[in-house]
Amino acid sequence: MNVIEFRDIVWRRGTDTILQHVDWTVAQDQHWAIIGCNGSGKTSLLRMLCGYIWPTSGTITVLGHRFGTVDLRELRKSIGLVSSAFQEQLQSFHPRETALDVVLSGKFSTIGVYDEVYEDDVDRAADLLARFGAADLADRTFNTLSQGEKQRVLLARAWMGRPRILILDEPCTGLDVLAREHLLQAIQVLGQSEDAPTLLYVTHHIEELLPLFSHVLLLKHGRVVASGEKPRVVTEPLLSEAFSIPVEITWQDDRPWLRVASGAGVMGAGAASG
Image 1 (cartoon, rainbow, N blue to C red):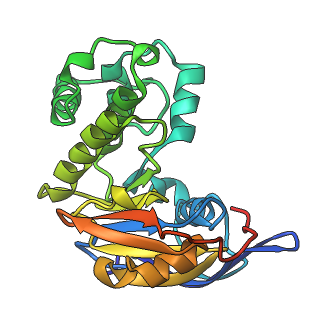
Image 2 (tube, rainbow, N blue to C red; image 1 turned 180 degrees about the vertical axis):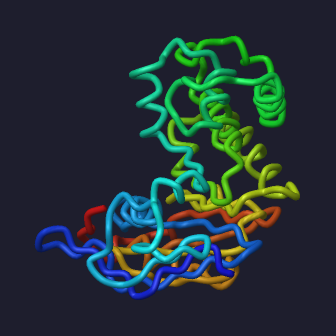
């Protein structure tokens, strides 16, 4: 059984076509990076995967369940999400919740803990904080944490619910180099664990493509530029097309590093919504 199947997905919002005939298959034991400039359709794709928006045409199957035949509220319990939007919600409504309570809330997929918590739950939440290098943050209130600390706590929270799919939506946004590398190291460890979920990592920063990511989906203006194994997709011609500017890539420790080619000019203009 494939984890995710998008078949000829089109999504229109008014007169704008946001996603254009997207085909995408994620198999078991694959971790994917989704790459594209702002406006390439990454966010729309994720919202559709979670069932928050519906395609204009095409079919979606997630974890063996075809959309239209499954209770999406139940399916979402199998999908974890780390995003800046969720962090903003948490800061707005529960800013003084401790890091430990934030992680515990992941068991229930809620903002705040409203159900009974057992000793085993507390032990697991504490273990997850330690796993992501945040054990010393357990009693700190969320609003006193640095951006990098918040992201590590949210990563632990997402894993608390034992999701089968974990979406990391630009998790390094706003982090300095050291905090970014600490978070990426935690993600690498998670992805290599025996009980790891399928990871979907969304970014437009190529250097965040860790060795654990086996496949890449490259988007531009809502269409698929390329999809498949990382070495076949992360190439100078394909990334130059996706980013509309000539780029050069170097590899170090199985991570690509990108720079704009000397004397390069912008290859195209305009951007899709989403």
